[in-house]
Length: 113
Length: 185
Image 1 (cartoon, rainbow over the protein chains, first blue to last red):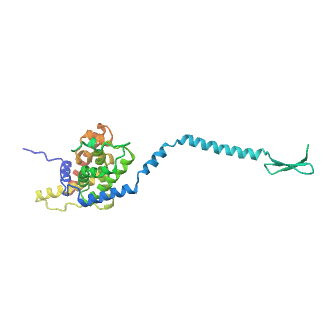
Image 2: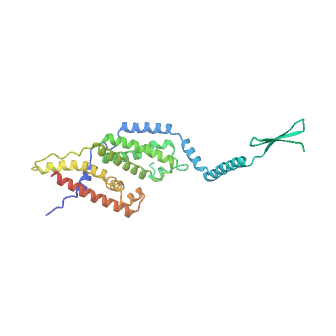
Image 3: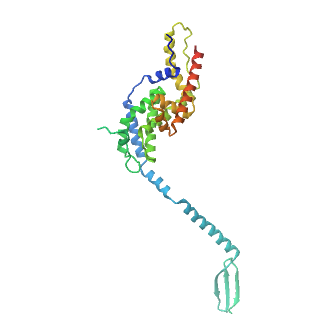
């Protein structure tokens, strides 16, 4: 009677599964892992996740839009200041002349009208 | 009283496990992870490294999200990390596995025994060279002894996909091991 030889993969698996070695976790390995887990808990406190959760709660889109408005607004203000100088202040002297100070640094004097 | 796996490790608030549960997890699932790592890696020192990294990774994952199925997570982590270590071992070894060295085929029984012992190492080498998904599926199916359905659930793929991966992996391994055996004879 011809008996079919076992599949080579099955033979290899049988060898692999019957590999010698401790079937239970060695005590020193277990102790090492316990120690590592304790260290892990100390090194990575729980608030790390809280921070992450808080970061996720930030509404980034409105915040970014708000920042854009501020930036664009400041650009517009700066451009406006450069293009259109306005009166920064006036000084009336005893002789009856008025000195007008503009925001671009110009000073113009004229008699009190 | 022993609780069921699903119930015992149900998470409390938003899936974050309390720290004091870890000794229980180590106690109950540690041996499974250990045996799995040892079978795949074949070396106690590598299995110890794998065991530690799996447990630490499981803690890290449990802090990020809710773990519904601890056994599945640990089996998958054990598989992935074992395969990573196996690949690293053969990548850095840079030397082929030792041949049987027996030129005289007179003692068929002796040759078979040594071939079989060598086969386990050959199988490890060939598994390490498989595509990652095939290696994972094959290991879960034949080393862990999961069903195709369980492999699919663990890998979060369809059963058909899992079946195909396992079949391809097995065919590739059969071809490669047969070629290797022919060369050595």
